[in-house]
Image 1 (cartoon, rainbow, N blue to C red):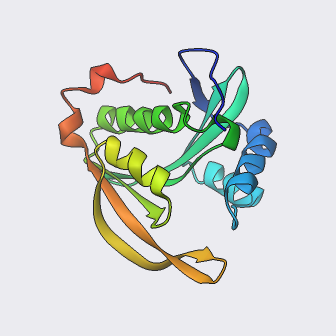
Image 2: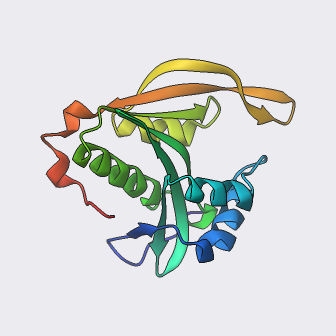
Image 3: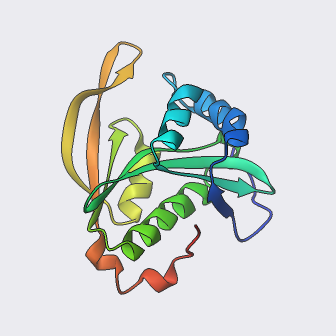
Amino acid sequence: MSAVLKSDTLNIRLLEESDLPAVVKIEQASYRFPWSERIFLDCMAAGYRCRVVLSDGKVAGYCIVAYATCEVHILNICVGPEYRKGGCARQLIENEISKAVESNLREIYLEVRVSNMAAISLYKGLGFKKVGLRKDYYPAESGREDAYVYRLLLKSFVQGVSNLNLYV
């Protein structure tokens, strides 16, 4: 069941250490092989873009992004089960698209489990294209699961970026 969001606008802000219990709870509720709190702390210490999306002041989801010379790599994006299908993931990704365009970066990459049809549908709807396959990328109950690699070329967004809500 997805939550009915009470506001038209979700708030996106920097992930703070005080958010980690909520982030880890979402991670554990969403994945059979979740990231640990230590991994999130390491991402913060490494200077990755770590953002949370808030709904009614509560952490509804998060996004962890690494920047390279000309590209962005979405490492982890997740929304709590009660907030799914409410626009949180879309806003997190649109926020990263806006920031990447503002930073004059060329492309965004991400991996997604081949079985994660909801995420694949979202990424395709945002213009991401499948560009590869990573064999045995994710741990799975019975061994490993493949991941699709998706890419979004940002040159197509330069004209339309003003339509996106930009958060910092």
